Amino acid sequence: MLELDNVQVSYGSIAALHGISIKVEPGSIVTLIGANGAGKSTTLRAISGLARVRAGSIRYDGQELTNLPAHQIVARGISHVPEGRMVFANLTVLENLKMGAYRLKLGAEFQRDLDYIFGIFPRLREREKQAAGTLSGGEQQMLAIGRALTGKPRFLMLDEPSLGIAPILVKTIFEKIVEINRQLGMTILLVEQNANLALEISNHGYVLETGRIILADASSALRQNPQVREAYLGR
Amino acid sequence: MARTISLLRRSHPEKVGLRQWQAWEHGNMSGTEFFQQLINGVSLGAFYALIALGYTMVYGVLRFINFAHGDVFMIGAFAGYWLTPKLMPHFPGAWMPVGVCVVLLTAMALCAGLGIVIEKLAYRPLRSRPKLTVLITAIGVSLLLEYGGQYLFGPDPKSFPDLITDSALEGTGALTITRSQIIAVGVTAALLAALSFIVKRTKLGLAMRALSNNPTAAALMGVNLDTVISFTFGLGSALAGAAGILWAISNPSIDPLMGILPGIKAFVAAVLGGIGNLPGAAVGAVLIGVVETFVGGSSFSSYRDAIAFSVLIIILLFRPAGLLGKAQVEKV
Image 1: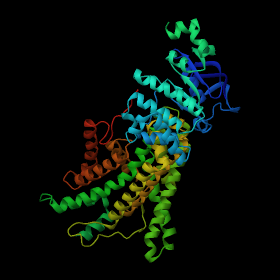
Image 2: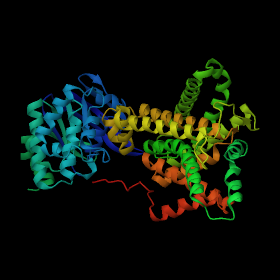
Image 3: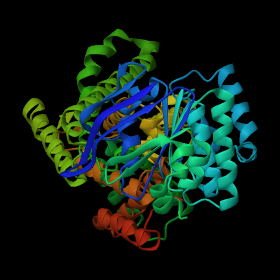
Image 4: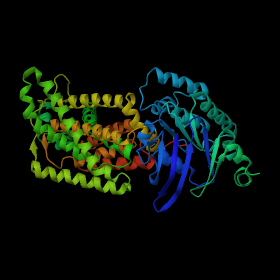
């Protein structure tokens, strides 16, 4: 479904990705794990058109995506829930969800999507008219995911959904991610520092270190890998 | 008396406050005079509001001050100057109000086009450069419009044609309310209502607010930032164009440098209200208009502008984000 081939990205003269290759199969959850600054977020940013790709190619369903502007990439069905959530703080929860469906008509289908999102995140329904900036971190994360879903993506990228969130909500959010994957058949690419959680819910994992992939395997195998256990799972 | 002031307003708009004061000099300001100044101040503030909204909208989406905005206001006045003799003969007699609307809307459309072109040619190529670069470019564009205007229209003041016949309304007692004031306030109110509808209820308005909040996230929602930014410039410039015509109706001497001072004052109004905040710009503009008029009608009238700017400084000392501005709520 999504294929990265030897993708290189640099910020100014500093190389962030030294040519990485990734493959995501339809319907799967794939995770990128690694330390801070390993290039996980940059990988997602390259896919969604926020970071400029210097060399290599990104293909989605056989179509070339490399260096298309961000708004055209969303239109192909790829949604990116960015690091730090980036909800529109001054807009209400409902307006945020409408923004997610910006390219689409706000008709009956939007209402159905809204019902689905409110079904998995009931808190959002309660806070529908509230400015998004007044939500807690966990609620903002729910909103960011909901906002991505109203755009009807087929491919969802999540950047650090557990970052800065109360532990009790982290568990809920990860359960919902699995639910979205199962119920909607959504393909998910997950970037996460909490390697334990990420490898638990994913089918396949890549380990990044300073802009390179050093390991790629089934998640169950990575969980048993001594190198991963020592460096990322803390056992 | 009312008639004289009205005529005087047409020939020497800047002197009205002073003359009125000289007549009143020996007494305290009466209730009538107070309301008179209030009316003059609010209608002046309405002009400033139309210009201030453009500053604040552009700041909202691009975080920079478009210093050429005051000159778009001037182009609006010249568009009216050029369009009136061409269009008004087609609207005789009772059709005149329609003609006025046509002139106003055409001038607004021309200014919207100008604003979009300015953004595309001058600011867009610098989008990823430091804001200071764009700011300096904006000053350059401003000078280009001012002196380009002098080259094209000549540096001498032109007399704005009689788009509407200005006169004082009857039956207002001791108060002088001119038709141009009523029209200015009425048109401003209508435009503000339209703007508020666009920003609050339409998809592009929602996108504008989202972009102003977080451009990266807006792009991730599928918003074409260029389209929304063009739209914002078009909208702001159209309002400035309308302000240009309204201004010229009550101050019928126009010249290519006429945009500088109203432009600066509208900018001050936008900062005063909280830059990036639309209702704030309107509130700040009315405040500046009223302060300026009251000071203009007092014995400090020659310090009118200095006092208006001092108000800005004092308010910003206590509320650095402006009257309605607030520090961005952002949770990380």
